[in-house]
Amino acid sequence: MMRFLRPRLRKPVGIALFGTVYAAAWLVHGGNGWQWAITAEIGVIAFAIAAYVRGGRDSDEDALYGSRADERQQLIAQRSWALVGKIAMFAAFAGVVAAVAARATWWWPFAAILAVTGFGYLLGLSNYGVGEEVPGDDANDGHQVRFPVSH
Amino acid sequence: MRNRVREQRTQRGLSQAEVAAALGVSRQTVISIEGGRYLPSLPLAFAIARFFDMTVDKMFDPDDEEAGT
Image (cartoon, rainbow over all chains, first blue to last red):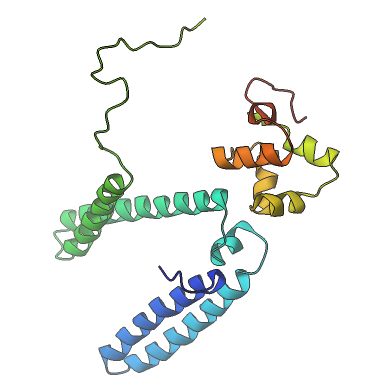
């Protein structure tokens, strides 16, 4: 996504795009929503500029902002996103439990987030190859598999 | 797992930034590898070994507890 942009611009442009969509939602909201839209857009532009500036600095986090992370930094980012997913899932579960216990009607947003995070986990398993039936070289060839001798 | 990255780098009088630039990784990653806090991927391990004209098993030795100290 956004490969056509220079690496350092990718995160700031992404932040600006998502933030602008959020600000647009306030405009569509109507009433005094335009005030919130302007406030959100100012905040988003400031965040995008900060992300661009940080993208040129020399640290792990700044390398991620600059979309120039090496393998270790990418691993750190993957672990962080995995943690985000786990926390979102547990928070959604806690929300559903609390709503059910309180006999509240607001259980369904939590249930929706729980379903989406669960689906995302299954999608991840599917995308990254879990469950693939790939026979090994030794499968069904009539030879006995030899294991290394341990001393 | 210990490694000889720091030892080889200092023998050659190179900075961590120079090694990082040559390997195409960040300076922080070189620091982490030297400190044993990060095990590089196989391609990066080969790149490190080649950079220092060593074999991977000489550069990264799971049995050698004293290497790199």
